[in-house]
Length: 151
Image 1 (cartoon, rainbow, N blue to C red):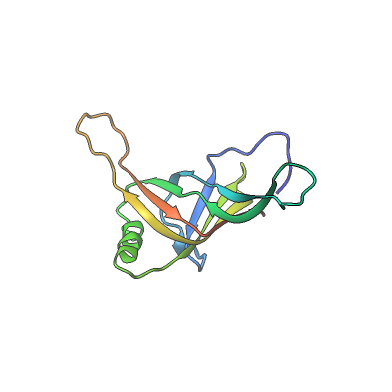
Image 2 (tube, rainbow, N blue to C red):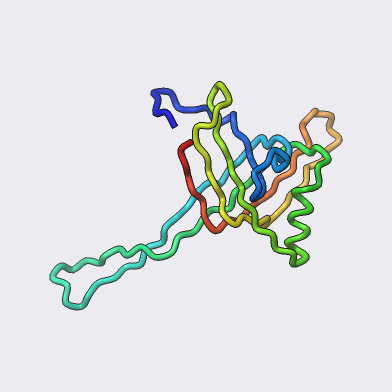
């Protein structure tokens, strides 16, 4: 990744679902990705013979936030099928890669979700108000790990 004065736009990205990483693993165009986060938990510890009266912070486990993918409904059932398979006991964790692109559509960095699994699928809100909104679906993912990489 090139360090630059102007930050990259958040509107140019690709989402790849699957361990193979082929072009067939790109499932439609997602309009939103949110929840890319990781947190390290700390325990407080103090020896009984410590000279100073304060606790040390000892890192222990880490956890990742749920990641939400949103896209317009396009008739592709693979997202829901993945959730349905998981629900029925056919567990298929996937590597999910979110790649940020620059203005020339060149990759600049990526977030890799390791052993991602579907947690929740939400279908569109349908209303006959004539507003012209796009029918959107969401897929909420859990992952064992999120890594942030420069390209």
